Amino acid sequence: MDKHIDIQLSALPLDPVHAENFVHHPSAGGIVHFVGTVRNQTQSKEVIRLEFEAYESMALKELKKIAVHVCGQWPVQKIAIHHRVGVVNVGGVAVVISVSCPHRKDAFEACAYAIDKLKETVPIWKKEIYKDGEIWVSAHP
Amino acid sequence: MKVKIIAFGIARDILYGSELVMEIRDGSTIRDLRRILVRQYPELEKLRHFSFAIEDNYQDENYPIKDNQEIVILPPVAGG
Image (cartoon, rainbow over all chains, first blue to last red; front, side, top):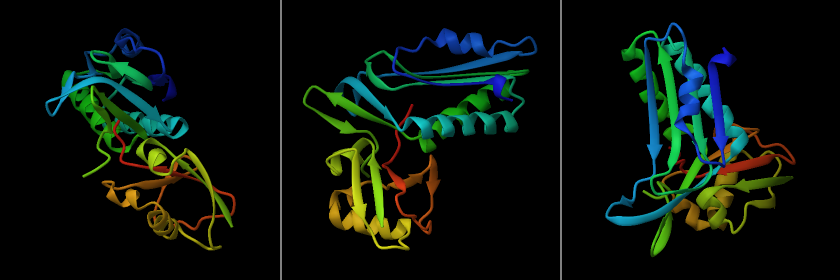
């Protein structure tokens, strides 16, 4: 199973091509990529940059769990999940998820599941930095 | 017994540091630790929620804490 899964936390800029290359497979008929990028505003506040922090050993483990679960639920050939830590500027790539399956429908579903689950369970936090302040995203009700 | 608390994200700001050693009663559970922490750091209660992890796994409230364990406070996650 493991050679079908590529999990990375990176302090360096992510290149979505690496995830794409990893998931190429001769029996894949559909590859879906999700690339999460940093928006320049949130609720009308201008965002300057994001700072990601991870509890790395557990984050890697939780990302792996998601990938293994996805491989069990859908006929996934390969899956790559790459996430940034550290500072990501506006327009920068925060996360890349690539999934290859024999058919596109499964690839879409598997990829959507993976990003939704990542946002729920993986111990990664982000701070939004504005011109006039900063906030830990989702921390408060 | 002694435990080491490790805090990330906003929890680190609330605890004024990423690590803290605390003395708690033998036989304490995660639920007991949560109560102690909230009493000491009321800002924690304003969070949407917070969880605990030991050895890289989420732990539930009934988990019996052992001497010298490292316990990680996980404020609401926000990856992606």
